[in-house]
Length: 442
Image 1 (tube, rainbow, N blue to C red):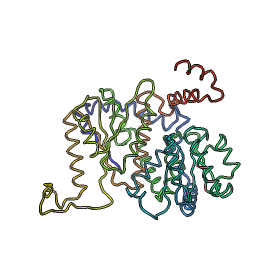
Image 2 (cartoon, helix red, strand yellow):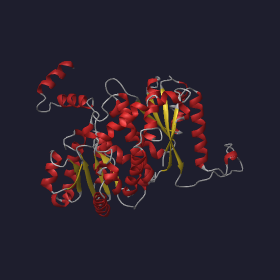
Image 3 (cartoon, rainbow, N blue to C red):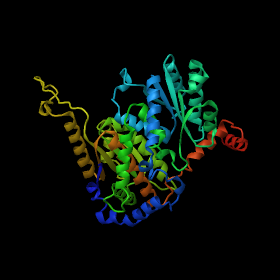
């Protein structure tokens, strides 16, 4: 089970100060479990792990098996939570150089997470002559970024295979009843999975949205969900034996002590995209009403040679949450060298991970001494079970923390502002007034 340690924040906020948030956190848990808080129509994720039917997991695994057998490449099309969760888990579990190796099933690539013309051109060029399939993820089917990518890749697949055969390699994850993608899937006969109305995108990694691409990549989604079930059970109690409760109360105590930026730190490069998922989860959930901790992330020790100076000696408006991975999959020891020109013989015979752990510990001590509070999250290994725990831990912590902050953690009204401006600038039908108004400003 993952563990949370807050001892290295106590020079900034006392245990008594952290515990002063217990009542608000207990009320938040009650709102999450009873559906009495703001955004209560988006609480389907709370009991999702323990209520996911075995039949759904089996169906996902069967579809994934079919795609793995028929495709060299599978493109998962989505943006935000429809992309980041799957990407985070796949990157965390994959061989770092899987993209350069042959065999072991299809490569899972992503599209629709940007509007990069070169990106799409190069993706389509890469797919020429390859057997590929598509997982398209969208409740509406009209979100601009994934809709553009799907239109182009669907056309390419149909040109390669013909409409009937292409439809067998397109999986739609969408609304149960309505929307453009649901209509198209029905008309074309695509295999579909449902995005439930009560699960928002950033909380959807443990639904087919995340589980299907992860299964296509060859990973054990049963173990992933089982780990989330363990954390779901561990986070029901309203006290600091609940790791999500402790995380939420501590970060809110730090926020109100002037620590407005949280930096998620990892010392394993495979967790880079996990941090990207976490940034969306907390940024989109808490950044409202001119409130909220700004979520940032660094990959150490790499970023110690870029951001390390600012973290050590910059403005004291930050705290760090460090994810430490206790056990590695592989073992490497540092060799001895007779010439010792690099001066490294003093660590000869030590594991690379031991050196990394001492870099981590030394950095945490230095940053705490420099006035940067540190929370420590320990995960036993980068395995499906523990990633499932970590995902649910952060989801539950986010719900609790958002309610302590007194915002609705489950909406994202600010996201719509850029869309309205973009549609007006593109002269989308129905936006004539907005188009005239925005052009007058240019």
